[in-house]
Length: 192
Image 1 (cartoon, rainbow, N blue to C red):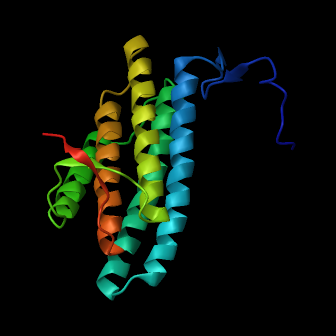
Image 2: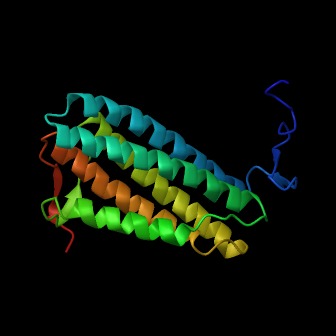
């Protein structure tokens, strides 16, 4: 079997339900943004694996390892988000439970970090900077999913899941700075 089909050569693609749709449709755009986010998360996992090897102590190595496993868990659920957008078949994924799980993780990580009252300037480490790239791609994917939801019915649990994912990535980026002993670079204006 060949990888190319030539079915998309005229700017149309096929959904999981077999429906032909324009590649410029909001659904395909959102699916593409989610696909991009999943790939960026994979790059971040590879970078944090390198950070894990150089961590000062076993606690930090364990923390990074746990977050890597969790990020892979999220990647798999992002594939389910794509399925929900590209198919009329319901998903058995409980995105509300995943959102609650992320909130617990965010609260746990955030409790270990110094208070922040300004904007962060990314770029202390490769892993931290890539985490911020993931966060911004997630925000774009969230906006794209919101546009799809404006046009057709989708699982209402998906938008909160996407929103909380970007929050999680923000606190994770901060934690990666903390673990690697870098002081966060911040903008000189307050966000209060």
